Image (cartoon, rainbow, N blue to C red):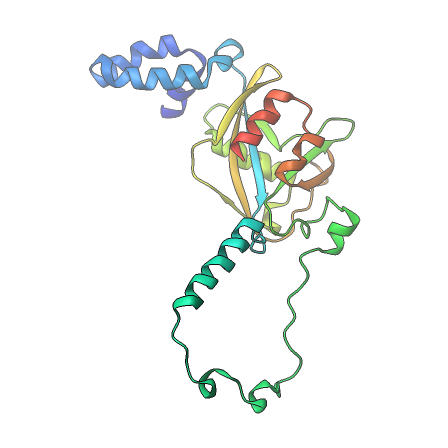
Length: 243
């Protein structure tokens, strides 16, 4: 009932207005719902076609490097503290020669931030841009790049549509995805339909395209690289704001 009412509200907001007004018992509760429905689905009312897309993202693996202004601030902060810091006797602050000798083995060296995938510009790899978010784009054979998406079915929530879109694109049993909330992160009119976006984070595993998905290839790109793949200005503008 709720799903059918939601679909009717999206496709026929004026017709759903009378039903909601009777249910709520007054015009004021409905006015809020009607305003949200009309603003979020004006395009869907014309065609009635709803699409659900999943924004599948890999979170940063390492802490981003500090910008130059922050380094300057830290140096200034240390200089101010040193000016008023109490001076301790040298025997308390100077390390002994025996303490400088590392008997436990070689000194720990962190892994480099620039990986082999970065050097080769391998955008199919997750091991690149470690300090940034990466987003998965897919392309069907002979088609254009997009987010994984499917058409909404009767009795299905938009999140369930996004979950189905992800499962149709990759083997979700081999990875651990986490959908962030139930509400869409944004929507846009595209190809005569209204496209709703749900964010999903990759927690564990390496996604692999399903052979039956009809998709030819995929890439993992950062926010500043989306313009190289998304050729629709309205969609690209929304993604830049949403992400």
